[in-house]
Amino acid sequence: MQIAFLRSAYFLVLGVLFLAQTAQAQKIKSAPFKHIQEESGSLYFQPVPHKAFRISDTDFLILSQRSAQEYALERYGSDLKVKWSVTISLFNQETLESFSQNGQTALLITHRALAEQGSQALYGKLIDLATGKELQQKKLVEAPSRSRRLSVTLSDDGSKLATLHSVTRNQELRSIQATIYDGSLIKLKERTYDFATAGQQVAAQVQIDNHGNQFVSILTENSMRLSVRRYNNRDNDIKVMEVMLGGVFSGEKMYVVDTKFQLHQDSSLYAAVLVAEEKTGEYRSLKMVRFDYKANDMRFAEEFKFSPDFTQQLLKSTGAKRLEDIYLSKILISNEGQSLVITEKKYTEGGENSPFHAQELLLFAYNEYLQPTWNSIILKNQVASASEGFASISYSSRLFSNRLQLLTFEKIDGKTDLYHRSIHLLTGGSEPPKPIGLHLASGKQNAYIKDFTTWLDERTIITVARPAKGTSDLRLHRIILK
Image (cartoon, rainbow, N blue to C red; front, side):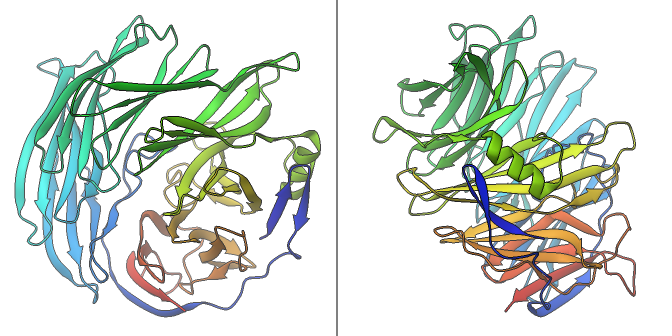
């Protein structure tokens, strides 16, 4: 287990292999917990990756699955006792699409296939956080079954959402029909994002901010040009910014292979992209752009090139044969505008029952002017069965002011536990990974369920795991760190 700083062409190692420190949890409170393994149909990309939310300094909300078509939505207090519980029943052709809360209500959005009518629909259900009472159930959008699957995007605070119906012609995206709602499921606006003039092979992503503004990111020209449009709910004004991120450099054609977007609530959108060479498929660089619609300006970070020296040093550190299977994982932004891009190596070996792997994290930090400040690597080697996918491995994180809290489920020096890292956003300084002290089961299915991990504050973590000794049932844990 190791953290190292990367300087464009070499590593500056921060010491020798980190040994696991003594358990750092000052207090752990536990209670029985019921949940079954979900059959999501997508083990590689989880449709609903977060099923626990903070409500207050003491209370939190959890959505757990009890059967193939039944969920339990529960509010817990500081003593881990259930304050209220409500059963969420789904139809046979209905699946959970999204789960969020806005401080007053919990929102569940489901996708329902209506085979007899030849259509599909998204439904919204509102639950009062104070009482657990169902306030409303509403059909949000309906489309033909032959259309692409309906989807939804929500704002960070859960106060706005947009349902999305993709319209295609000959399998190519031509437009997206969007309906904007507030957190009470009141319709605010209907609009169409038209891509008729964007050319062929259009890929689009939609984000919505807390004010209801929609940011439509479009990748065109064979994945080389990124265009971002901002729509508002007041009028038909559309603001557009675009930039070439691929192209021909030094005689080699480059294109974008992965993108990640993050809204900041100051009317700006951060975009990180990985660029690769068309001929070899090898990664070339990481690029970062801030689309600032308040200033009507774009700001570009210095391109981080994966030079041969850098790649060789990285491969030497990880033991890999080549740089591959790297995905953009997160963009975190502080209140002061500093940002952090995290990539992760994730892959499966191929085949129906092949295990899933989640390995090193690469961290790239920028100041409020998008100037690079530091970069580093977190080495880890997590493996899960094909039936679990990434439900337990990878990582959970939360940014508090200028401190990144990161939690991973690993086995280090023969000890299987949750390991905690704290990384300073401004300097990259960190302590060695420390075991929480849960002494979790090893080699058992669902020893840890990452979906339920959430922070009540910087030192209080809620999570669900299976202990190594005693009962084999899952336990809900409230962890207070030193």
